[in-house]
Length: 69
Image (tube, rainbow, N blue to C red):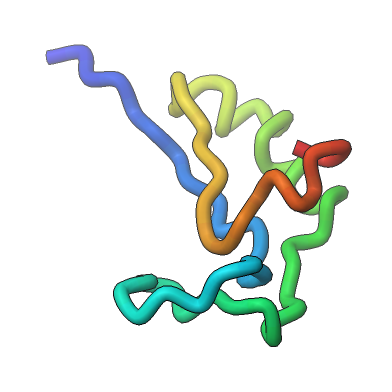
């Protein structure tokens, strides 16, 4: 069976909201963010290209870093 594989990156924990139901406990007070170069290296690696067909970005509000993602 040929299944499509999806890979998720928790890119940031920063979010303008602080929802009680957030599974990552993101909020405006959290400043952790994945290093852009590390994310780029992972996505562009030969293993990643061979194994995964989709990547998604999650965590806090990823579009706060629109210029990176």
